[in-house]
Length: 394
Image (cartoon, rainbow, N blue to C red; front, top):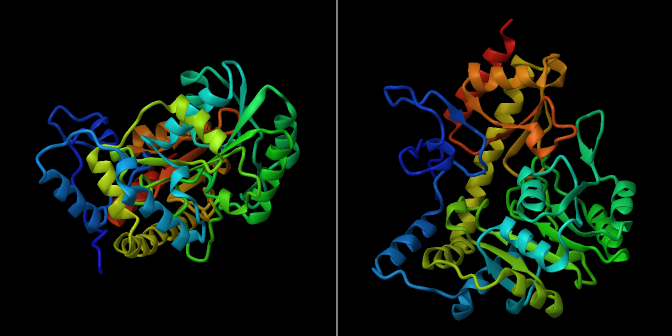
């Protein structure tokens, strides 16, 4: 297998949020390059494409149920066992139409309006939106600590203080971490399990980036470590790994029967489209795994190119190589510019769309930006060249 990830696939005029939400010139031309949304400008596995054609060829797209197709849960079971040596019963796997939908259902089931929900900023900004704007809870941040070399680690003291408060009933763990790219060690995860278990905090582990690792890194599913699963919800999906976010196919894995029943009551009746059902079965397969191996090499090379380019052309911008995800967390503080000026130069002058750090960290994200390095390399190179030119301007 040899996949042409360098091919630029036209996504405009497809109602693509990443591309079609950008302003055009009066002539209909697009001058912006978006590296902001966490979906890839790279082709999905052929096995998934064929599965979509097979469903389309049926000519009827009626209601489907994951419970009626054993291969749906079976594909995820096979993947987790093969990739992570994790065995989960099929009965513990529940379909959901997105990781954030799992979180929202869990907040409805296990907390009340006004309660606190623990997160670890800087962290995926939609967590806060879901917690506060959509569920009426309060985001409580047990902030990650940043070392002098730019790496991040957990603050266990802050986490224990947050968990000790009885108003904070749920924690959302991002594993691997978006946007800082940490792949948590067994020791780190064990400490989180210990603290949440001690105070009976429901622990939701969002693991949608679990397969997107640098060579040599190892992701450990939370359920692989948990001896007591009575407070654990693990999220896995095809969305990030296989670039299928638009199919809205995620899974909540809840081994504890009582916890699962309460979650299901809050989630309500949801079922995958025939396309989503077929996509999961196709993706979590030997063919999907072979595609992922090639993708890993390509994304790793993209990340390494970006880091090397900035190190040579604009070394004041600090970028730490992420252990996982295809995200880069860029630190512009050493440039001595304000957050507003950094934003203006990137978005207005360079015409590159990233994500403002304040979205992921309202308290400490000024002068940070998140860059998605999962596009054809020509696009990555052009965007970075524009960024350096704009940021070096007097």
